[in-house]
Length: 348
Ligand code: ATP
Ligand code: MG
Image (tube, protein in one colour):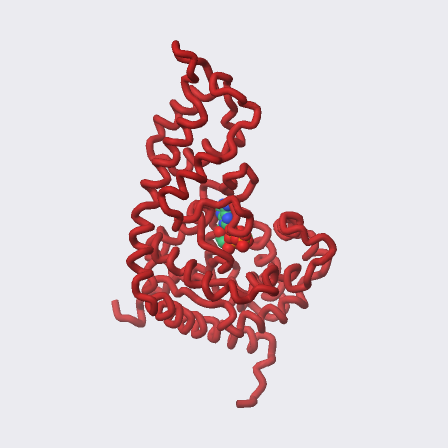
């Protein structure tokens, strides 16, 4: 087969806000799928600094350091910069341009109905101080996805409303101007949304309840030992609840020994004391085993991260190269959009 006959790969677009180091929630929600699919798809990974500014515009200096941290996390989990373009969002002006056009295709009430945006406003205590940039960020996400002509978007399931919004706008655009935009599908981590160490429904970088992929062994152990469990189980001899108990959720997600997990669950739910009066299975034991599992899982990542961090230029080299590839791709898509909208004026 000659190069011109090689079937072009379908594309992936996904990304993260550079608001802190990536955590276990990112791993199960999205990173795992990215690593798996990077050989099969042409992959663009957006470092969403413009979106991060929508709720951090007063502290823009945080972005630079966090871009580096996020890229080190990508390299540590095994994303290959030759297969995946790591693209800085603010350096792709086509995304801003598309956002403006798409804003005409959505109503204010539709934006206000987005359940993820509503949750985030509440979590972040925005009250009445809701900025237009924040309310409209789902539309900027539509631009992110379509600027790269993505077919597939591997994300955590908190992003479902964003994918729905994207599909609505793509369909509306194509109906109005012609079939130019690619209609994408979401791909959600099989594990759903990972709860925080505090038992909150979501582990989040900005929520202070995350175990970061880069945390050292002692930090992981400390975070696990202070985790929320079953609030009604005062003594380890009482039967405990595993539903909504994040210690067991993490065992399910990360412990490769499924038999042991089943055994732990059974003993925990039964409760009971040994002959010396001590619990058959106390919270401390379940947590100790979890800390061991998580540390074994994270150790190879920590080692890779430390290797990549040694060369201080490497991260920026990879980002420079990925952003150039991203701009090329978005530029081509933009030409099609301008032509479909008949705003490709004959002016050089
Ligand atoms: P922030 O608190 O700044 O919003 P975040 O932790 O929510 O940060 P994002 O950068 O907003 O992280 O999300 C990046 C990707 O990771 C998205 O696809 C999101 O769905 C996924 N993700 C984030 N947190 C979780 C989680 N707890 N469980 C599963 N997926 C998650
Ligand atoms: Mg988020």
